[in-house]
Image (cartoon, rainbow, N blue to C red; front, side):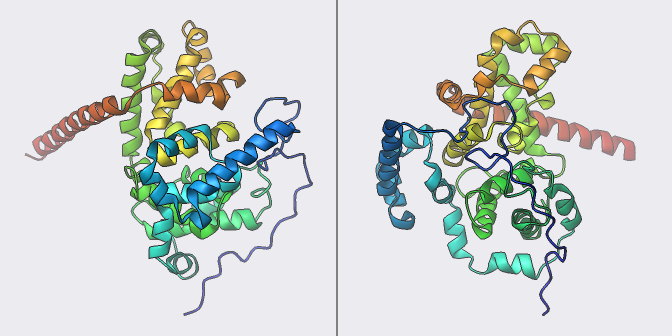
Amino acid sequence: MEKKRIDDSEPGPVPPPAPLDRFGFAKPELNNSPDGLAKGRSANEYEREERRIRKWRKMIGVGGSDWKHYAKRKPHVVKRRIRKGIPDCLRGLVWQLISGSRDLLLMNPGVYEQLVIYETSASELDIIRDISRTFPSHVFFQQRHGPGQRSLYNVLKAYSVFDRDVGYVQGMGFLAALLLLYMSEEDAFWLLVALLKGAVHAPMEGLYQVGLPLVQQYLFQFDQLVREHLPKLGEHFTQEMINPSMYASQWFITVFSYSFPFHLALRIWDVFLYEGVKIVFKVGLALLKYCHDDMINLPFEKLIHALRNFPEDAMDPNTLLPMAYSIKVSKRLEGLNQEYEKKNGTQVQLADFHEKKKQS
């Protein structure tokens, strides 16, 4: 069988070098924010970080060989360390270990290559169209048809073939791109599979299926949580006719990777992969709580702008995340899930009733 050529196009010109932050994104001009831009570290900070890395290396073992044993023996230590942030040099490996994707990779040798090289996808043109819109300011994805864009295309194309029911939806590109900054194509593909198919936590594929059923569920749950945790703000949102679909859909679809500062998104992803989607609800509530007093009197237009453009100080992970961790949502999310299913089931039954009535 002749191998399918992934992309016959020649790479475009390499963009001129621009100042980059420590994650590889072009630095915005006149930005002095504490977002992890490359800056000198004191000897004490450097030593503290080195000690932290040594602790993590001891915890996971060579290539992750000790991870499962340690995680089972000391889950409270693992949880605490993950919430403090995984060292960047170990992030890719640890993400694979805590997501269950490493096991999927080992159980499916050669599958990724088969999907990329020999299969065709109905979504190929859609993927090509969207690639240049994904992290366009990152050095890895800037060059047209360059290595970053080719890798992103391969991962998304492979997934669209692997799960033809979901195929490809635009928001998936940000998940895949984030993963590719920390691991190989094949590793990124299997982590995407682990997330969408639910290797450890509840499957996420409903975020991307027709009608976005899981997005609708999460927005219903989040709306109720806002009313319960922040009743005054919830009431103000009702008066101004603001609902979560106007500002929070992307939080769930891209797990904060779309428009949030990268250093914050990484810290959220550390916890998300270990604890599940509840951290998205917690961070969302923490953001609203932090900005509560500023938002409580804003009219509709200014409120929408504020909900899509949070202030820089609200995006500091060392302030926002401890606030998020203090918010308890697990039991209430379970109750709201049952409530949503009951409500949705009733709506489906009503729709079927009306359809039958039309036919009779």
